Length: 475
Image (cartoon, rainbow, N blue to C red; front, side, top):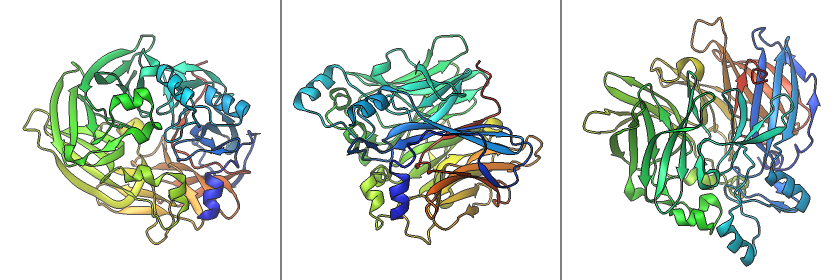
C-alpha cells in the first residue's frame, strides 16, 4: 500500500493531457457512446506544503469520451482562485475541508471579516439545466465547459454564496433540481432549494437549527424530502470565525441521537421529526414509499471515525484498517408515531454507492447497488475492490485484482437491456505495480472485465463522476 499511497495521494498526475485514443484491451459494447466526466484531487501539494486529508487537494477534471469502440481522454486542473494562487505563491492559499493555510495572527483576524473558503470544487460533477458544474464542499460550485474543461463561472443554489455550504448530491426529478444548503448564523438554517429552468432558485423547505450537522447528502422520495441529521454538529460561530479547518470544528455528540426531518415536497411543511440511535453517513442511496411507509437506504457508520481515517497520515499507517460502510434500510411512517425501524441489507464494507439512478430513483423495485469496498483478506488501508450488492438476497459479487485500487463504479445501463443489471460499470483504477491508472469496464451482470483503457499517468484517488450521452446540449 505504501507505493499506492505515494502515487494516489501525491502529485504525479499534474500533467494536463489530451489523448485522442487510449490503448484499449478488450472490446467495448457498441452501445457505449458518450462521455464520462470525473472529479477529484489532481495534486496534494502546493509548493513545499502538503494537504492533510483525502478531501483536500486541488481539483482536477477528467474526461473519457467513447466513440466507435474507442476511448479518448483529457484532464485539466479546475481553473479557480485556490489553484491559481497556490501556483503563483507556491503555498496553500485557501482553507480546505481539513487543511488551512499557515496563517499569521493578522491573517486570522482578516479571515473573520473575509473568509476564504476554497473554490476548488473537487467532489462531484452535475449537469444542472444544461450547465456542467464541478461540485464541492465547503467550496463554491464552479461551472465549466465540458469540451475544453475550462471554467466558466460560479454556480449558486442560494443567494448569499459565502454564507452557506451545499451538499454535492443534488436530486433531479423530471426538470426540477433539488439540493440542501446550510446557512450559518446566529440562527442557522437548513434550506432545501429548488431550481427550475430559466427561474431563480426557490426555497421550498427550511428548518432552523442551533447546531448544524455535517450533511453530505439527503434523501428524496416522490412526496418527501429527508434530512438525516447525525449528531456530528458544529457551533456556527466556529465556522464563521474560522478557528480551525472546516471539518475540525464539528463535534461528535452521540447522546443527541440521530434526528430525521421529513418534509412534504409540495408544501414544504415539516410533517414528521423522528429520532433513532446515533450513526453517521456520507451517502443516502435511494428513497421510496410503500404501503404508507417512507423507506430510505444509506451507507452508514457507527460514528464519524471514517473522516479521521481519511487523514493522509492515517492512510499511510497501514496498521489502521479503513472502516467499511454498512448498507442499511430505514423505515418510518410519515403520518404515524415516528418510530424508526432499521435493517442491514448487505454486510460487505462499502462506500461511494451507485445504482441505476435515471431509471430507478425513488423506485422501491431497485435491487442492485455498486460501490467500492475493502477486501477483508487484506490489510490495506484503502479501497481495493468493487462490490455489487444484491438487496434482495443480501449477497455480493466482487471485482478484485492484486495491487489495484478502483474508484467509484459508475453504472451505465444497456438501452436495450431487459434486466436491471444489464449494463456496464466504469471505474478508474490505480495500478500500483505499473504506476499508472486505467479505466475499467465491467459487465454489470457477471461482474467480469470487458475492457480496460490505459492512461499513461496515474489518476489520483478521487470521488464522484457521471456519464452523459452528450456534452453538447448546453451549447
